[in-house]
Image 1 (cartoon, rainbow, N blue to C red):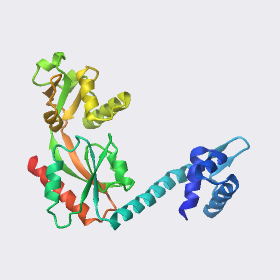
Image 2 (cartoon, rainbow, N blue to C red):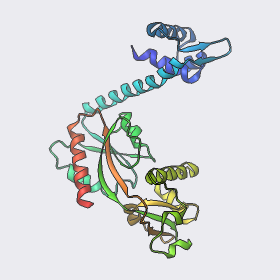
Image 3 (cartoon, rainbow, N blue to C red):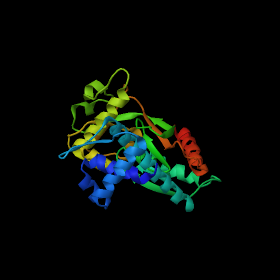
Image 4 (cartoon, helix red, strand yellow):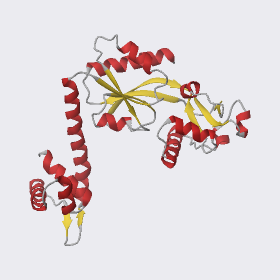
Length: 282
C-alpha cells in the first residue's frame, strides 16, 4: 500500500468532510473520492458511512485511522533520520533544567568517545521528548520518569531525592521535614510517582506553564505547592521559596531514552556515557 492513499484517508477521517479534506490536501474532491473508493476496494472493507449530510468512520475505519497515523509518522521519522545520517550529528532532546545538572559533564565525556558525533541540543517543553524521539526529530532524550515509553528503549541515568517547594511564608516552611499528606499532594499505595506526575502535569496545563521560571514564580506567589528534583532546588535557590525534605516522596529518576529501532553507534555511545556520568554522581 502506498503512503498517498493513507494520507488522503487520514485527512478525510479527521475532517469527516470530503470538501474540507480536499482543500486541506490541495486537490479537488472527485479524485479524493476516487482514491478513497480505490483504497476501500484494495482492502475489501468499507471505511466510511456516507450520507448526503454526513461522513462517519466505520469500526474498520477507526482501526485504520490509528494504524495509518502510526505508519505515516514512522515514514516521516525514517526520512528525518536518513537526512541527518547524510550529515552526521546527534540530536539530544532535553527540557531546560531537566538534566539533573549532568548535561555538561555528559557532553564533555561523550566528546572523547571514538563513535562520538557533534551533538545538537534540542530544548523541549514539558513531556515533549518522547514524541520528538518517535517523530525522528531527536536521537536521544534526557527525561524524568514516568513518561510514555511506546517505541522507546531507556536506561536510568541517576536517582535523586524530591524536595517540597513551597512559599517561604507557608506554615510548613518552619519544619525541616514534611510528609506528602501534610502538603495535600496525591499518593497511592502502588503508584505515588504516577500520581505526582499527573499532579504536576495538571498544574502545567492549568497555568499554561512553559518553563521552570514560571513554575517557581507560582510557588513564590503561593498559588502552587509541588515537588522538584533536588538538583533543581540546589541550582535555583530563591528567597521566596522554601525547599524541604519529604521522606515519603518517591525519588526522581532521570533516564535517557532513544528509539527502539535505532542502530546508531553514536547514540549507543551517548547512552553509555550518560549512564556512566550519572552513576558517578549518584
